[in-house]
Image (cartoon, rainbow, N blue to C red; front, side, top):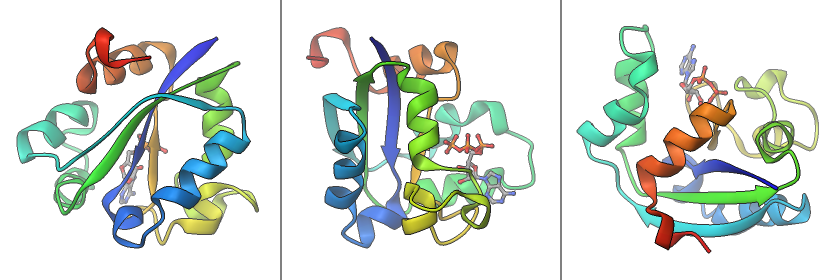
Length: 137
Ligand code: ATP
């Protein structure tokens, strides 16, 4: 079984969508093995998204991701990284397939409700960014 790092972003938390979104993951056999809620600092958001530093959307992304609480969770399942990205849909909600989390809950490219790791290397980095080994069940 594989693990991926999932975030429910501030827009979705504000709109009371934690439950509906976690339900989608569980229904897709992506099982939470660690969950926490936190409010990212500027330094944490910049560190998490370091690969995007210098891109035109970076400052807005950091401002958005620090705008309110988020949930971070480790989800475990078969082919979890790719499967999760299918469940959430494309980054741009207007391009996301019907029935995906972003098609149903995202408002725009920036306010797109969720994050997911895009490779095994980023999953390892992102899980370790938020969780110690003893916090994962
Ligand atoms: P995530 O990494 O959050 O799962 P992703 O892998 O689908 O998203 P990336 O290209 O890694 O997308 O971009 C990271 C995040 O930056 C996006 O989820 C989105 O919130 C924001 N973002 C990306 N491109 C844009 C853009 N053109 N305008 C505004 N925000 C953007």
